[in-house]
Length: 356
Image: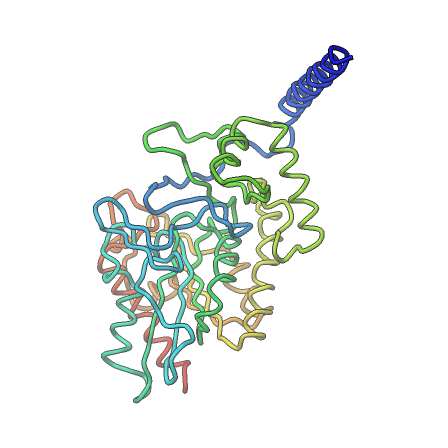
């Protein structure tokens, strides 16, 4: 009798193993057809300050309280390269959040020399209104596109900003960046590596186990996707649909359609939370092309956003954009004078447009 029970248990175990192996093989064979490719836009990870994000749609984020090995990059408790700010916002405080990518983050310089902090110092030394304290929060994260900046901002709303500045480059239209696992390797990822590094996990397993299975098991990835899709149908605001894919598009038209959704959501948040929204449109410094007309003309009119066209400012101020490049080969990163110029440009806009 016992031998019969053991035989049945063994048969059941073998059957389950065969089913799992078959499911793994099928999922692995069909998986590559589900994703655009395995060459997304790459952001080189610094393990001390980058991690997989629990915020769905972000992919990766900076580690709250993290610090790079040399101490050059220090991250606050909200995952930003800045100091701590009081929550709730103190009275008589005018607070600005600048959402951006590596240009705002200021990869080459100490945070005090980024245009966000130069603007803050200018406002504190020459306030627009007496009795008001001015704070400018650097919310730049290297590699983020428009969609990622939106998901980041949803987690920063408790800062209660009076003004949100959105630093925009034309590459904000395209694929969300993902992190590369280690320095010095080719810039391509397997599907497993992508999921282990950037998938907004929803499975009730310890983090390391979950990441290991996401990396090596196509069947586990398919189960995770199924659960995520179910959650996104239930709460799309919390679980953005298909955030596990490389959330970018092959064509500019599709990318612009997604960006229209992003800025429409920003418009709704601005009305609901009572902050003003300013587009800071930065051109490439090497090619001298201005940003796409959709973001510079259509978007501000449609949503009632204010706008600073940096390309037009260069022409008006007779500034050579080449002189503001951080490196001779650089196309968008600013040198010290570039950060000073951008801070002054925003300050001038504030003087003309902000009343308390």
